[in-house]
Image: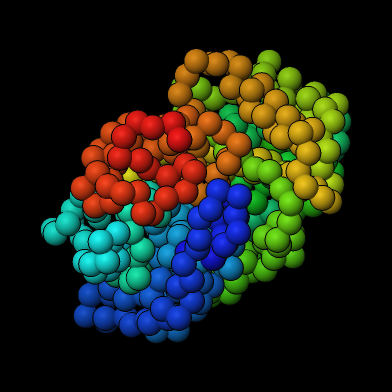
Length: 401
C-alpha cells in the first residue's frame, strides 16, 4: 500500500500480514477552479509530482524518495524539503475515499466522518484502505535554491563540532521557514543539504558557510523549474542505493527543542560512531530539521503528532546478509546515548520509519503520542475485529500484542 515496506508486511511475512496492491488506482484530475487534485492511491510520488506540474504548475509537499506510493505517504505524514514552509502531505489532504473493514466504501473529510478523517491522516493503515485522495495543491515555487556542503573529516572531534554547529544553527528562532536542512553522517563524510524557497539574494543573506568550518565541497544552484528539482532529489536517493531492496535495520527519534543534545553527549555520540562495531556494510544518520509551518497545525488536529520536533534523527544500517545482533545493538546503542541527557523524557518516533524490533506497545505510544487514546476509540468504531492489522498498528484496546 505504501510503495515500499520497511518491515516487509507482504505475503509470506513472519507475522502473517498481506499487502494490498493499489497499482491500478491511477486516476488523476486537477480542478482548476479551486486547484484541488483528485489522485488515485496507486500513484507514486514521482508520478504525482509530474502530473501536478504538467497540469498547471502545481505541487503538494512530500518526501524526496519518488518511488514511494502516495497511498502510504499521505496517510502517515509526508515530510520533505518544502514542509517547513508548506506543511506535510497529510495537511494537504482535503478528502479521502476509504474501504472499511465491513466492506463499505465511504468518504471522509473535516465535515463528514471527521473522526475517520483524523485517523487516516497519520495512522491510515490501521483503519482502512484509502483508494482516492483529494489534495489542496500549491503553486509550484519559481525560485528555489538547492544547496550542498560536504566535509570529509572522519575524526570524532571534527565531526562532533560540525554537528554542534548545525544544531546551534537550526535552533535559532530566526531560522526562516523557507529553509530546509538535512545533516547526513556516514563513515566517510558529513553532508549538509537542503533548499531555500525564495530568490538567490535572500539565500545569500543567510551566509550559511559562516556558521560552519570550511567545507571541502559546496554547490549552490538556483532552480526555476520545481519539477526538475524534485526529480534531482529523487535521482540522488536512487543513486545512493538506500531505496534499493536490502537487509537493513532502521530507527527514528524525534527531539523537542527542550531536549536538544548537549555538547557532552554529542562528543559521546561521535566517539561511539568511531569505535563501535556496526556489523554493517553501510550506515548513515539523517538529522532532518522540523517545525516551521509543520507546527502551525495542532498536534491533535491529525493523527500525526510530531509537530513540535526541532529535528528527527533517522538511523539506517544495511548488511550483506540478514541483519545481525551486532547491527541492531549498534543502532540501539546510538539511540540510548542520544537520549542520555533526558533518559526519562518522551521522544517520539516517525510512523513512516518503523522499528519492528521495538516493543509493540511502546512503538504505538512513540508513533502517535497523546493521539493514541482517540485513535483506539476510532478503531473500536470502524474496525473492532482488527482487520487492518500489523504488529504495531493501532489496537482497539491497550493490548501489547
